[in-house]
Length: 311
Image 1 (cartoon, rainbow, N blue to C red):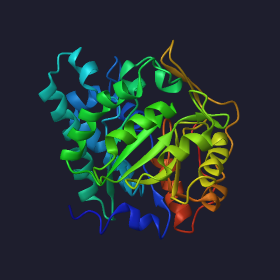
Image 2 (spheres, rainbow, N blue to C red):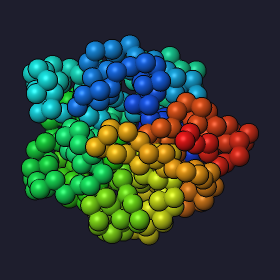
Image 3 (cartoon, helix red, strand yellow):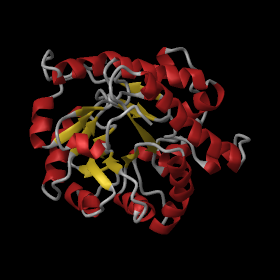
Image 4 (cartoon, helix red, strand yellow):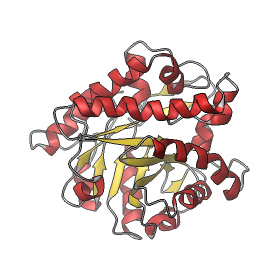
C-alpha cells in the first residue's frame, strides 16, 4: 500500500507520530446508532460508509495512524447476533480495508493499525475496565488467535493490542503474536499506577519488553493524570518507544451506558510525556478530530503542547 513510506517502527525512531481519537464518539457525532452489545461493530456491519467517514475526519485533522473499527468484533459475540464465522471474518477484514481507503486518500503519510480489543470488550459490560475474567492464559489466547489471524490477512501496518486491563491477557496476546513477525503495540488501560486488574505496571510492561514484534508500549483509555506514572513505569523496564492515548478523564458507567465527565479537566502535559519516551500520541474515548488537530499543531510547532479536552 502506498500510503506510508516505511514501517511505523522506523518513524518512531525519529519523531512523534500522531494517532487518531475515539472512533465511537466520532461515529456518534455523525449520527450513528451504537446501541446494543456490538457497539462500533454494529456500525461496521450496517454503515461501513460512516466508519470510513470517521477515519477520514481524523486523517484530515492530521492523524498519521488510523485505528480500525475491529475493537469489539469477536466471533462469539457476533454469532449471538446472527453472524457466522465467515461473516465475522469478513467484518474484521472490512475494518482494515475501510481505514486503508481513508489513509490512501489522505494528503500525508498514514498507517493503519488493526485494533485487537480485550476479551472484556465483547462482553459489553465494562469488563475491560476490570480484567480478571476467570479465564486462563490459554483460554484467552484461543479467543484472540482467530481474530488476530483474520486481521493480519487483511494487511494492516501494525496491530493495536489495546485497552488491555490484565497482565494475564497481555501474556495471552504475546503468546499468539510470538513468531509471527507482525509489528504490534501493547497498550494497557490503567488506574493509580496499576493495571485495571491491579498488577504493578513495571511487571506488566516487562512481559512485552523482550518481544521483538512489539514496537511500542504504553497506555490508553485511562485518565490523563494516569499517563505519566505509567510511562515512567514502562521506561523503567524497556527502551522501546512509548505511547499514550488517554480519554478526556471521564469515567464509564456500565450500568447506565454513559460517561461521567470530570468536573475540571486538566491540560495534557504532552511535553512531559514525550520527555519520558512517548512517540505515539493521540486520544481515546471522547477525544475527537478537533483535539487531534490541536496535537497536530503542537507537533508542527504551532500549538501549546497541552492538548485540548472535551468535557
